[in-house]
Length: 497
Image (cartoon, rainbow, N blue to C red; front, side):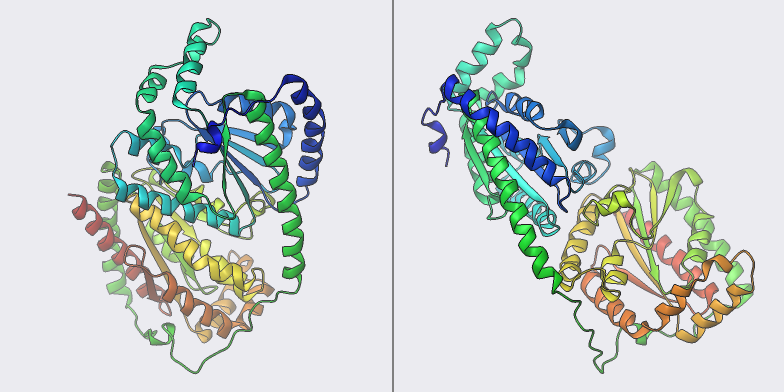
């Protein structure tokens, strides 16, 4: 697939100068137009060593308005990055809507180099490429434009380029021992690169292969390609918006069938004596296990979802009471901020993935996309239907990294919820918890219950299961949460041995 980039493409300086002025103007105009668009532009610049990646990126930074773009370079992962799933460092740097992000080194770099060096095999790289396609599709489904450019050089051209750089005292520093080693691995590198590009070049995110021997030609070609792709995407988004304007949330049909929540026994309870005894037992156990997990660098993520007044806060407080305050963080999730609205909906959750040995608790979570956003019509049917697989992939990335993921749904019935609402209204420090929206949500109880049932069915996996908690009795619910967390934590630590 690299033959087209080995034909000796060049462009004369006069021709280059004749085109570049108008091109730069058009780039700035399209960038101004992009500012008001509802999607980001993600540009990946990859290729062979000496292919001119740095020169092209420098020119793009010169030609575009730097206030609305960012260049991110990735090399060997830092300790902080190694303690998170591999895509964490990319998610946290994604450009917001209306701006451009240029990536030097991307999610392709490590799989490619690991395979070239023989540290992985074909089976492993196949899995990695599948994960990359999933990542890119999630971003594309959210509206992002992904532009991928590969700067290519023939082997003799690469050798010539590196020698020229090394000969010049001002550029000698650019040639490293790694570059020389890569030159010897050129054929192996090209073979793997061809496989990577072939399997990840899609209709929505195709690879542009550009000959890099002449910087004028490569920079002009890449810039023209970027301009064209952005223009096409803006027009495509306008058409998509017109279609979405007529799109409505699917009418929720209530089938006459039993659901998972109906199967819970809400009469389960603990008396005060047994509650105190078991609470003390499991809090003591959790304190010990959490310290072991910290020492062994094993992280956990707990997700708490449930009805309004379902007891999430009380369960979380009993849990954190047993854990060193330095070892956990609680992330309360409300409506997204202006900054968060400019990103993929999973972005704000990726940001808070814990470092090794720590615990993160989400008080409500990414499941808002398939619950409140679904029921209230904040997400289209296509968006919340896509979210099931996106969420499973997200949680799979965490569990594959060794993070334990547990998800608790705290369930109560309508009568118990109403009783708790009324009780809160009588307590001065709890009045703020009750709003008109809480009462309004009760009117959609059946819609939410159907959404919960489908959520659990589609996203409860062996490695990231849903735990349904009978919550009419707060004492029973709190102990069940503590007990299950201790059991799963103990199992995780034993498996590590």
